[in-house]
Image 1 (cartoon, each protein chain N blue to C red):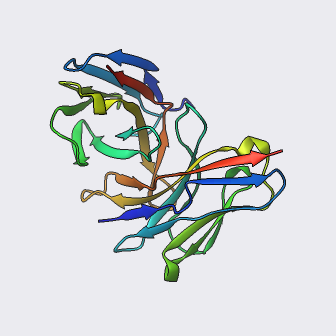
Image 2 (cartoon, rainbow over the protein chains, first blue to last red):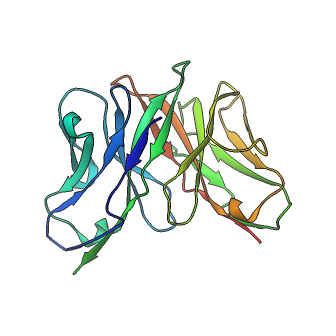
Length: 117
Length: 115
């Protein structure tokens, strides 16, 4: 069964500093990987996704993620954090259903990002 | 393009009662998934519906059931509510993207409190 680990429960960075949120996954086949962001009391917004091919991906809001198959990691990065980036971030691995009509997401526990002025 | 919508926003129920939560899919999406997010945790997959049939289920008891309608909207029903059912319930609709894999888009959720 697939699993996702986000080792950091809380991270605090200063506005303008760089950010890296860690994600490690366990999955038997080529993974479909996602990063979502959740603001307080809100649903999840898709930041970026990995399906195949390149190892560095650009998402929305200036975020990027690097896929490293040898380390089973899919870390999220941002060169310069803005105060509005304060939120909870979730990494997820997707597994397609047997009938290929959809997929099931398995989420990590999340990392709460706080931004100091 | 209208996103995923859910109703109600908040709900308070008493242990032992039954509850129905509703979700409208994003236009063009024919697969709907439901997730439970307990406080301080990541979402957990409850089940998924495709063409009005259950398409997969997570580790949830049978008192969690669902429906999908011809317009792809969906309901989540929970019977015999327990205190541990208190959570944010998220609905997500999905389609196969250009790269060939599914992308799930989430609604704002329904906050259920069981007392």
